[in-house]
Length: 522
Image (cartoon, rainbow, N blue to C red; front, top):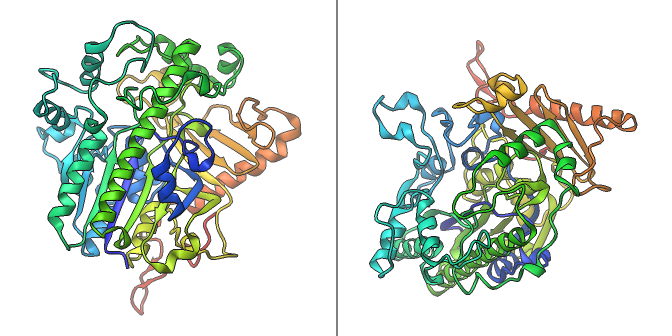
């Protein structure tokens, strides 16, 4: 029986970076342990990037094309329900530790409301247990209380910059020096402590916790022993063309993003991609992997805590991420565009109780999406997912069901509009609403459709690194048209259905749900 819910997101975690999936470098023993007692979804994908659009998809169960949170700072329409509000209907008091990166509907805010200046307000429906935003002042104060020398007026990433400067002795590159605080005092450890204190206060009462960890999101900084845990020589070579010019020639949008990165100034001691040298890039990777193992260690600490309190066997645990990280692949850093590295993410679900024993330790290779998280959690709690959800419950996989209809591809979207400066609009001669792309990806091909810009097609069987665009090749015209048709079918099938199943007539209103909404995702 599920009494409690622990829903964890780690920020910017690449889907391949689990040792349970055979990653050649990074070690995640505690997440591996969680996967061994639950179900690991190896082909799990985010629906958008960056943080706000992706988290809107997670918490509403909707594709970007429906919730319309296009960027960090785009408000979430108040008419949509979300995971927290639905959990409240189930009798829970959902509490947030961390952040949801939500900008509220401006129609509900007064002109002088300070929440109109931020996208770091908590999602409606969550009660704030411990907030931690880009300016993580509670954590910094926690460090100060423990005797650390902290910035007088810390703001955003300046906190990490000033920490870094305390120890910086040369300019070797990003992540070269360890963080000047101990592994017991990271932001992850801080939020863990707050969560455990809250659970102890709840005693035998049920709880619903959304724990949103920052790491391994930049800045690339981690304390020992994780800082020196991996060696640069161990890391994989970047996935990219042999030259920057070749990569830029892939597509006009790729060239635009690379040129934008080239025009940026270095900050926080970083050697910015795409011109970062190999030594610094390898160091960046080892730091990123160290950050992951630090998060994994805190995951182990939390699992041990739940075990000691006899809560593990009454708690549903879900671990995932909002999006991935380019990590130098295709000469890019961060999360953007259409490449797999920005959207392939981990998902582990562990449900308590003997009814799920047959599926424990399984790895699911069928496609799953972040929009499936809300329907899955609500379904496992005995609630009906709201009609707005574009995703589907993953319950059949947890029950080890066989021979049921399931999706054979995944979709994601990216909106590259610039509301403030309009750079891409000016560069491409596009309107605000034409700065977008949509992706359909299956095991064979990836098709990328741009609004007004050329499309792309990659043969993933023969070109898994997405280096050879076949969109203009005459031998692939039929393949292109087939995937374009699939994209249109997906778009039409997933239009907003909030009231489309209702019909008023002389005998009174009738409501009917699509027969395949919970059984046949495509």
